[in-house]
Length: 145
Image (cartoon, rainbow, N blue to C red; front, side):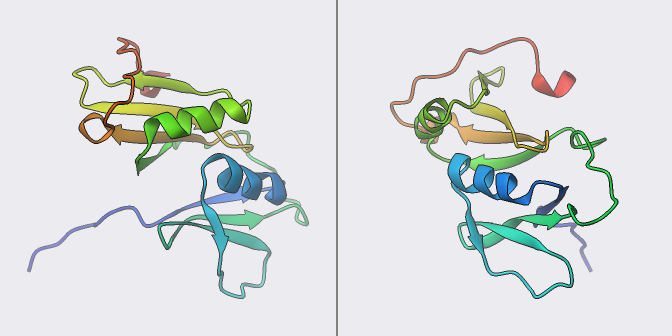
């Protein structure tokens, strides 16, 4: 019988600032806060296209230290659509971000950090972005930093 790990289901962030984190995923990335099981600890689930892709756990009432970034996990990536719209949204919200074209030009990317220092990578298939203006193709790579 064949075996497959499958695709990424969700990622989990343990935060001391739940409200700012929810606002980021709602207002900046456009995810929606939705249903969450009645766990014995506070948190939120953030949905994209009907799927809970970001799980948030509020650690503010605990002694657990807030980690300064995403630790050994460098970034989390989403297959995305609407490159120009996301760039405009980030600019209108005053968010710092980096946009670039992967060498070869088939993939465009936007990198932005959430309030907890988690780097979010948004990937766009160039062929599906229509009249969008391509970001600069650069030799450096965010993944190398």
